[in-house]
Length: 352
Image 1 (tube, rainbow, N blue to C red):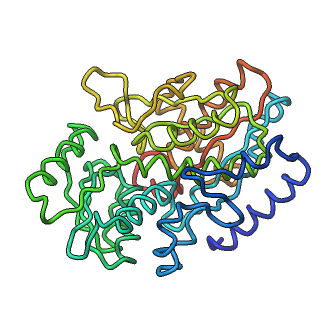
Image 2: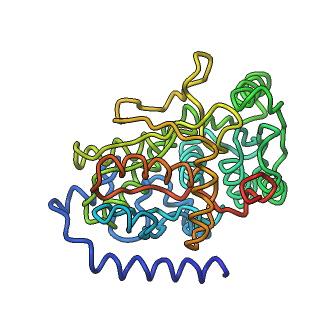
């Protein structure tokens, strides 16, 4: 099904669901506030400083505004548990990463840090790199991405399709080697590069604070008990956690912990003493951490595909975490995210 048609059906499904399930939020003004004092009055609630760039490049307005849809996978086993997934795989770059990359690049353009002649540089396991390549191409700026060699072939092809230059690091040294290499490059030639540094860039988490969390509050009417996510750069869980806990401190933020090897693409192990902890990660918003194995991740992706949700590895890991907490609690309204599309993993063992 074409992306636009699929999005239409998913959005229609959510509208019908919302009409039955959502009720007005207890504080409508609070729900409509965003970072920096801006208000959401329809469409995306981006920081006003980047609005001129969105006007100049209107295709970028396709990013965000994704539907929130019911996932009935546990309905028979757990009838008092409701699970809703934010369909971030429907962003034009195919993933959640479109949001923070848009905010980081347009914010840098707005304040002059990113200027013509510079090459956009960052490390990525794939999805953020695709967003950089896609948006950088729209802006007419070259993009260079440092990526571990075990990133899926589909991601690498999409990056090259948008004209990005890839620097590949040894997969056996882990994703942290890509982080070390991108820092070496940035410091060796600062005149050439604009190093976006998504691990330390506050515009990363602010994108989710301003838009992803805001949309969740509006789409649920502020009624949720848990949000389940993970850590790649730390931007998603930090932005969601800060915004949702401002609204209701009782909302539980659950963080998925993947295995170190072979790992879950897009999610960062944080259990080892040598693991690099993202500078923007706010661990204070995390209430609980749930280990999830690769076997659980793959099995959950297969179950989701049977329901029509063809999503990637991290989405399966998130649902495995939802199941773990829901079986213990037996009730609640769980929000999670389907981060990217399943087609991005045909060359991995996910669909074998």
